[in-house]
Length: 475
Image 1 (tube, rainbow, N blue to C red):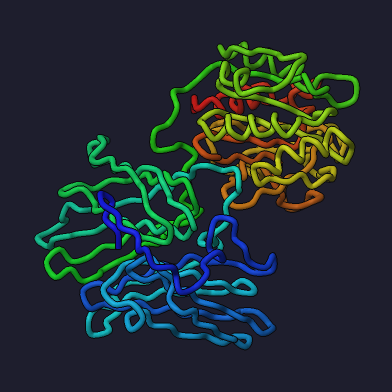
Image 2 (cartoon, rainbow, N blue to C red; image 1 turned 180 degrees about the horizontal axis):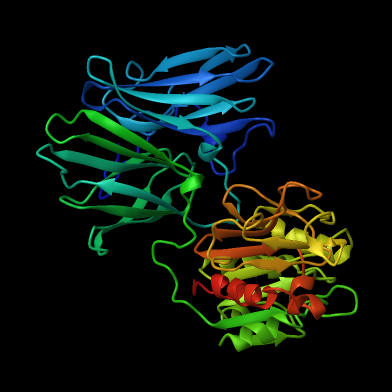
């Protein structure tokens, strides 16, 4: 275990080539990598119960990382369907809180059990897709949220720490901030963890509240509680992608300047996609620049707090796409809208969306029961059937689209609006949001919602303003 204030790195080469759990994830495209924490402090032990829920043979390789941030000799297993392998960690690495990398041929069920001295169960965690070590190559930071308590509820002492493990081949940087019961910053510490090492960040004494861990690389994060007198483990919580926050540890100042890009022939058919979107933003007090021609550069982008684009018929260059991803990573906003079907504009919008782990389905949404004037491809979305819990749609009742496509988002994306159960396709995202680095990205499957007569229907103009406010960190 490595202190957050002082780190040491072994000069000996690892016994095992750990490129399999480096950032580039150099494994077969058909393999998955799980980051699994363990704790064997104060005579305790950790057990992995690795189960194969599938109908065919499963292969697994476990890399346990030791105190010196090295991989021990890998352990290989073959599991038949519905079979479970038990792995105890103490005999492999005693008196340490660290992590392992589990490389498998397909999805598994992993239960982590913690034992006190004497093999009494002290706590457990169930891993899932949250704990897969996946990260977009261009993403620079992610912020995880967690709760903590160090103030005693009774006469018993409570102790605990956040353990952050770096399963990558390069140094991880970032920060961790603890907020207390009085809404104040209780502690703020820099994160700098060498490759494959683990750092401990104790909870602030006499406090309770929550914390934000902002890290530059995929991390394995474990919150451990222990008895304040004996030091024995009493509870544990594994932090994963389900705990991602869309506001970084040091959030940017809310902005009001939006750049709407038309410079790459951003349009569908003969109309500009934001004919009603821009007036809605301006009516809400935002400053909008409509960029008609020229290149997208970092210097241009940094004059604005967020960027909006739709269906570029002329694709952005590699340099422009690099500038856009860097801009979002730095703490700015981006909104991408697309359209139904295929075509060069949709395909190019999809390429931009791919940079942030999203995907267009290239279909047309049809709803036979909830639509505008009996037209199935004019779907209506309302708070009872389609809205998820998100600030963008909070308090609103109904919006509508005209020829929309559904979307797909991997880890980090949150669905804001989706189709209902009798739509075609059913229960698929239409509006997606995510944090990316220190910034935010929004993806919507219909430009017509913000243009032409469709923008005047229902609460579409209000949706336009709320989308702008969200990518500006105003809500």
